[in-house]
Length: 99
Image (cartoon, one colour):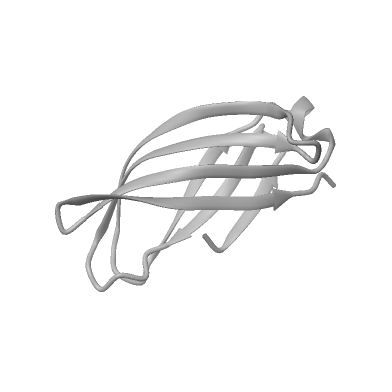
């Protein structure tokens, strides 16, 4: 993951890069938004059907209620993808600071 951008439309944009020399097929993102105290603010599963070419970037829109983003949050999750017909999971994490 390269970056996070907060949007007023109640989404957090997560940028994913495929470092592999072959296409990566994204299938699912399980995520949790937690407060600085560790309390879960929001969580969910985002089904995906996206192929990311080698070296390319994909931007995922992860839903987050705008009211939940009034304090700094941490996004933690697991991205499920297929590479060479093998299912793999990748850890995703980011710090989110409200404006």
